[in-house]
Length: 296
Image 1: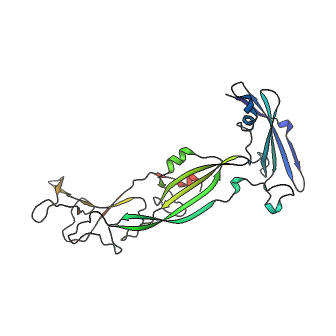
Image 2: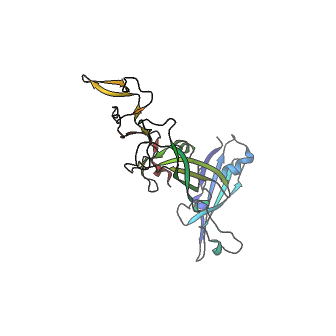
Image 3: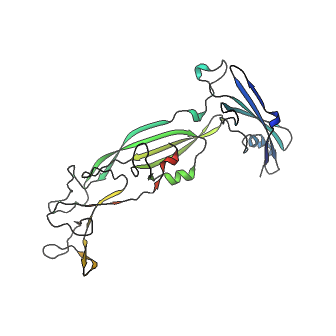
């Protein structure tokens, strides 16, 4: 332990207001024990819990922002921190002569970018909704693929902190709620990274990236998003014998086991020979998270 206590000296607070400006001063004392390096106590005092952060609002005058802090030693274990507040930002064309605009990094606009994402995906239906099979009604091995195009979204913004646990939890997750107008399970978080930035304060430039999967079922037109879509096929089918469910191997016309997967009817039964019907199964493989919790 190093800092023992932080106390605001309310009786020494100052404020000044005029028709053109406003300032305020808050004064704190920070007491230390011996469990630290005395040479870094000025820095520790400035960043101690309870001392205002640069750019933070004044607790009683929300139009004032903390613009700077100074530390004074009042003894080997007692330091004084003076926090100065001024009226929030002047635009560059309004700045007073000899001053620079007061701009919080958290006031900077977000960067929002939309872009296409290309991928090569297995396909099981053509553009007319017909299953992609050979003349014997069997799937191709290896499966047919085609280039698909999804939508990407990148958001970059400045934040006072980086939540590493949340980042680890959200990367690879899909949305459980509507996000930028897209229904649940269509949007996957693919990046949640941070760069540490230094100015008057340390802050974090956070980059979020999302992959929006808009592949639609050619028959229903419904988006299946990040659910894995697989044609229902197998070498065995399910049937009922004397009230019991049993599994039997699919046979050829010569009563031989079929050498390749055949289409099933979505309930475990075999699709009749010569039929062009195809059925598909959907599997949710990605964890779901509420993207509203990201505050985007």
